[in-house]
Structure formats: C-alpha cells, structure tokens
Length: 158
Image 1 (cartoon, rainbow, N blue to C red):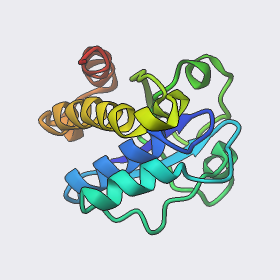
Image 2: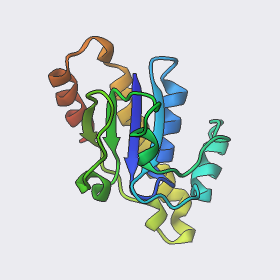
Image 3: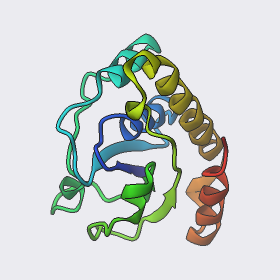
C-alpha cells in the first residue's frame, strides 16, 4: 500500500508520519510525504526526534506534491492530509484512485522553540497511534468504502 502524507510545508507532521509508516509498516506500507507549498527544509526538530527514536531520516526532504502527480511517480493507494490547510486545498490529480483521509494534528513547528520537544513528541505520539490503528486493520482486503470509514474513525484518535 503506497501512502502519500500531505501537509502544506512538508517539514514536520508529514515527515513524521512518513517515517512512522515506513518504520512500522513492515513491508505492508510504503509512505511518501509532500507539501502544497514545501518549505524546502525538514524542520530540525523533526530530524532530531526521529534520530532519537532510532528511525532513519537520512533521506527525508521537503518536496512538492507535484512530484507525485507526475508521470512515472508511484501510484498512491491512500492520501492522508495532516494539516487543515492542505486538507482544504485543491490537490493535483493523483494517478489511480487513492482513498483520502484527513488526520489533522496541531503544527508542532508553530510552537515556541523552548516548547519544540514537547510539541513534536505530542504530534509524533498521535500520529503513531493512528498509524498503528491503520496497521492493525486488514486494509489490503478492505473495499474503498470500508477503508474510508476506518480512516475517518482513526483520524479522530487523540
């Protein structure tokens, strides 16, 4: 299952969830992240937290969602937005027919620098709980309607 995680800047939340899916997915998921208006840099606290947790973030980069709408891009099965602004934007046309979901999480990068550690950990924990809830499902055999309903339910986990 190819999963595209979207956020406006692609520097924090989407990077975290991409890493979580790639770490916990055990070959069942392959995650990518992108932004509608990428900052061009991954937030340093995202990288620090992922490194601390033993997750490989070496290839993490802030990139445009246009990369995944281009010819030759991996076909997505699922598109998850993690910020309200990206959820409300008009997305490119993705190859295939991915199911869509919104798993909104407060932007940890908006916190004052002394609060970064707490804010990024809180976002990570919420995203990890949601990813685990999805990975507990037999999503490979679910139809689009069932999967969409479950994704909506999962997006309400706090």
